[in-house]
Picture (tube, rainbow, N blue to C red):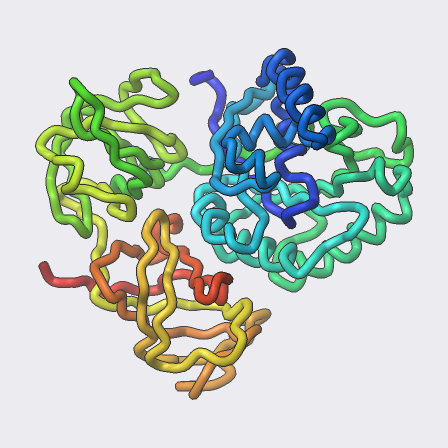
Length: 423
């Protein structure tokens, strides 16, 4: 396991286009889920009249999700290919779960966008593509799923490919570098083996496309930044924060500071998937035991960093945003919720500094009165309570965010500059 490069992979796409089934299929066909489990899930699915859901059930092992037939939380699953050791972040596609998807996507090294060959791209597909782009996912695989439902027709594949390509180009992805794979997660065509049902398709299978991804650059040369996802108290061990190292290296016997909680502790031990690690590097999702910190001293949304280079706590920050979907207009004083790394904090728009051309980045208007859907802009923001954010240039993973209001993602953006809070 440890001798293979590790990658975080997120499956994104519309709610009914087959993401969970795709993930279950990859886990099953690469031998990472025991056949007896799939048989068990199949039996349960048949008994509840949800026959085609057995692979999805591999991911949706929460009872509530099974009952609703919908993926709710971001489930972490792991599997090996001959080249990589993958952690899959199965991101929900439902509207009310987009915020979970954001925290999932900002952790991903690569994304598989699942689009149904039957319906083609939906409004949500565009939102997911744009978010992936804004949140810095550089590698993308497009899976055109449910080819069995369109009788494996090349013409339908080409139609959907063309529609998706248009959206990708509009947000700045280079389409010629992105594989488009016609497959069926349900039947298994082109998942791990080339499909005899699509002799017209000469490209890679889904598995081959995953192996063709390039290993992400590990930002080990930067200072440690580790957003905290959860904090546990484990009897006989103590306080155990859990999170993903974004930059730098987490090592035992080092002093770290959690911001904005502003508490210092000493790292005792680190573990991943119940195995002790000598250190954790970027991309590792780990738990670590910390001395001198109580369970209530640290919380989700805090960021751990070195004592001599603490994470930046913003008094205000300047950001470039893209308004994705706002029912009216954004003006000074607007205070929606910002989702950044693992934090969710209401922030106020202090200044609308300039409106940009989304395609070229040229300034279109200084100090606009308002922003609406489709606008790109540079804005000044003030968090309503202490929050860690970094310049995206310096710490990309801690400089990207999504803005949510009224149950939807209204904008996404990157931090350009931080005015630090004086402690």
